[in-house]
Image (cartoon, rainbow, N blue to C red; front, top):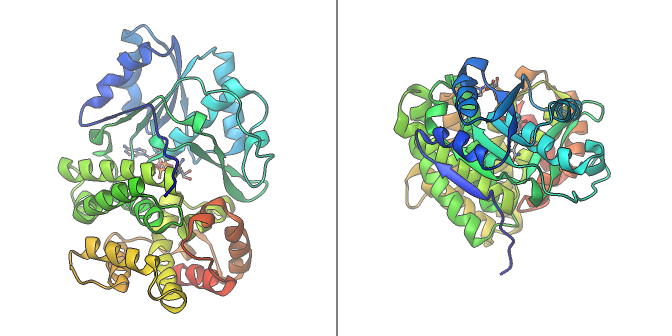
Length: 384
Ligand code: NAD
């Protein structure tokens, strides 16, 4: 047994914990760049709190998932404003943008010098400026991951900037911040969290630490996602989903992902489709094809056993078969009105290009078995 586990320096979890952000920030810097990924009104109280602590603060609004050029602009802005601390307050988009900006502020150069797959992939040499991540969605777990996912429209793909030095100094997960998430966002981000608990659990890099996080997270999602969707003000359901998202982040950062995220990288680069919704549409089909391939190739293997465990946790049936887990997820996607991928303009004719790009995506490396081109095509075609 051998594994490498790293996470944010400090994690604060609980309703009202957002009040700890300003006092903690005071220990880390004097002038903050606040990357805001929700409405300006929702961040107003944080700006006031930072000012009360005597911290200078300039905000920067995120209106879309981050791209390489947006991060370049963010770095320029932070330099002009002489920021020595970055705080991200929003969904995974704001957190990833802030994480990348904090890293490039101390490392210089272009994002492409460090980007995986399409860039030079050089390792970062210097720790980021202090970075605080405060999620306002419950899905990505980006507050505890070491990568920032950036779109490169030029290459029509999403790729990561990745280094253990990018791990946030502080992650503050306050479920109350998710109470106003509308149902469609609760659904898509929540299913991203579910994907990030299933894929690391069946990943070839799964380890006993990440297994524990995945199993606990799966229990939480199975009991709370439909409740959070139907009754957004249910704080207990929101708390479970924020915890599940955090657990998914801890797992994915240390065990990797699989076929669903393998496809999310090129789809997010080629189409205007939100990440969580893409993962949600692909999840039951990625599971089904992996299970079918495992039944044929390794019927007595570990992968099938793990999918069975997932099914038992999700359905609550102690003797559930792996396929019953797929059916549970499929029904949940129907209940949560997850649109098919065709609703984002993805068509049959895009399948060969997306399959070719997905096969090279870094997330695909965690998939429990190497899927053939036909099997990859099947996952995507079924999700259209
Ligand atoms: P997001 O950050 O793009 O936000 C989606 C929408 O929700 C935005 O319009 C935002 O303004 C709104 N929003 C955010 N908080 C809200 C709130 N409390 N109330 C109402 N609206 C709110 O969505 P996301 O799914 O959180 O993040 C997606 C991004 O995260 C993608 O770019 C994806 O690639 C990335 N990601 C990164 C990692 C990682 O480990 N780094 C993991 C998974 C996903």
